Amino acid sequence: MDIRLNGRTALITGGSSGLGLATARRMARSGAAVALAARGRDALDEAVRLVRAEGGEAAAFVCDVSRLDDVEATYRAVVERFGKVDILVNNAGAHASGAFETLDEDAWKQDIDLKLMAAVRLSRLAFPDMKARNWGRIINVLNIFAKAPRARTAPTAVTRAATMAMTKALAGEGAAYNVLVNGLVVGVIESDQFVRGWKARGEPGELADYLQDAAKKAGVPMGRLGKPEEFANVACFLASDAASYVTGTTINIDGGLSPVT
Image (cartoon, rainbow, N blue to C red; front, top):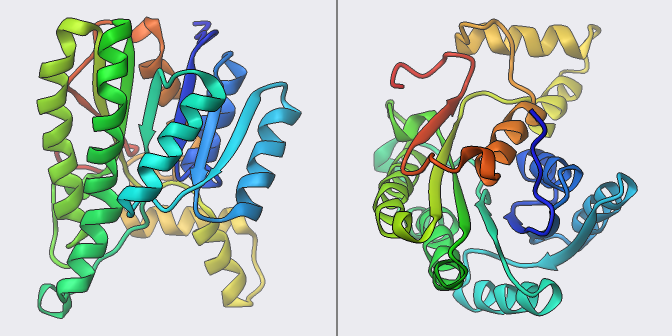
């Protein structure tokens, strides 16, 4: 299937590395212009270089999505640069977890602002414009604990579950205007975090063996970690007209790890 996004602009938070960067590169290859938002200028500039090296159009926007003023300023800057936002990928947010009694007020507030409220604020900005154009895509990145929380997975499990509920609620409001809202539920994906862990061991052995062992410990039925490109392929599909009758759903990208579909 040839997925095309020609003429579309995508705003991707957490776009300087990992899933965000993989999604930006995939959407750019399909013809979209991509706006990458993240906190670090150097990483953003390198991400833009990678996208442009593949022939894509990209621009960097330094933004702390946990701050309302940053979010509003960034959205205005993206619209000024590209004219519109057709596709919003709410991807920012590192995994935070711990024993419930150790999580203080600041830990909860930081996670809510970084994950739930960032998605709420950006969606609130993009939604009216998408409705006016009768076309829009909002993709919220979740994780498997949003559907099946375990002990010591708060606050992430809670904020991702709340974002999942928002996904369904907003999808119902956008459907009549061809604004489709979906979630992608991430399992265990290869990332820089795993590479750093392998290097930190300082032991002989191949990275591939280390990743295989990580998948085994996590209990992934497919027996391997996912790749960022595999996530990006599904995100690109959801953003396209090929997925024009898909809204209000959450799709697991986890190799069968989640007990909840």
